[in-house]
Image (cartoon, rainbow, N blue to C red; front, side, top):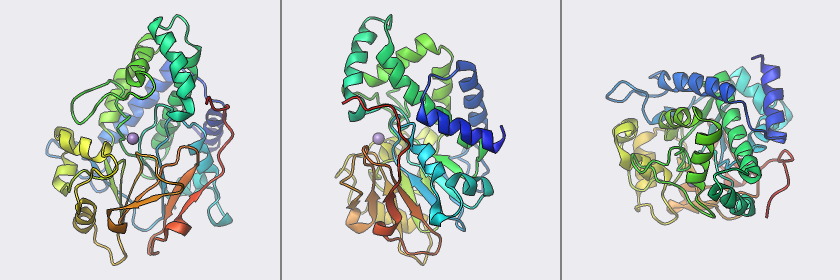
Amino acid sequence: MKKNNLLRDILSAGKNPRLPDENLLLVLLRKTCKILENEKALIRPLDRQKSPGGLIYCRPEIPALLVPDLHGRSGLLPAVLSLRLAGEKTVFDMIAAGSLQVICMGDAFHSENRGMQRWKSAWDEYIGNYTEHNNIDEEMAENLSVLQIVLQLKCAFPEFFHFLKGNHENILNREDGGNFPFRKFAQESHMTLSYLRKFYPDTAEEIGRYEQNLPLLAAGSFFLVSHSEPRRFFSVDEVVNYRTNADVVFGLTWTDNDESEEGSVEKMLEVFLDSPLPRYYFGGHRPAGNQYSIRAAGKFFQFHNPSKSTVCLLQPDLHFNPDRDIFDIQPVPQRPDHD
Ligand SMILES: [Mn+2]
């Protein structure tokens, strides 16, 4: 797809999320899996089975833009792509030119508080085996639009767009490999899966395959990024071999606030990185303060405010300054919220 058409497509999916065509989604999922299963060892070291491992290296010479948990917010990535950094090119043009990389911190699916009322109404639809399905349709239109945008970006710019696995990347409701079903206002995981089984019968398995191929940890020159704070210290070898180590998947996607073993962040920064600049670790997962929370003795910056569009820009060779580098962008207008 031509770059201009791709951007137009993404902006329109963000503004008006629709249930995508199943065949289109399957083509995108299979293409993305092929990319993820063949990422270069230089940027994604291979595990013992010769599959790309859980660690992805960012390009050290260009800035990295971190995007927190998406949770069905279809307007967030389009707003990121439309952003003009330093009043010049848009993020989309910079990714296309290879002068910027975007790293998403996981959790594409499931509106949370924003969709509380809708989840409650969707529960009745689920009980009725989705003979009625307006509410769940609306929820899934957002989730699948976000997924489609992520897949389109990964296919178009495989080396400049990365999406890390979050705890919500568990479409098949697995209770193994460090995964657990998600439940908040209803049985969100079960409802999502049974919706796909009914209306997109071939899609769930392919999303499952895609999710299992996502990396867990991104490393730049002076920073690390994962969905949640590390539960304990994980070595390079453990992270690379995550496909056969449930503890790593669980420990980098599910850690609650104050559940991280003391010193984990500091030790990982020391072992994974080699930079003269002060090193920092970034994550999302749990809603964090107004703009960001600081944990791990000032070394872990958590930013994820579901009612804001907060991003973080990390420039090479520039000392990280949270008040300058973590900022809100203008969201693209979306359908009205439900609570
Ligand atoms: Mn999460």
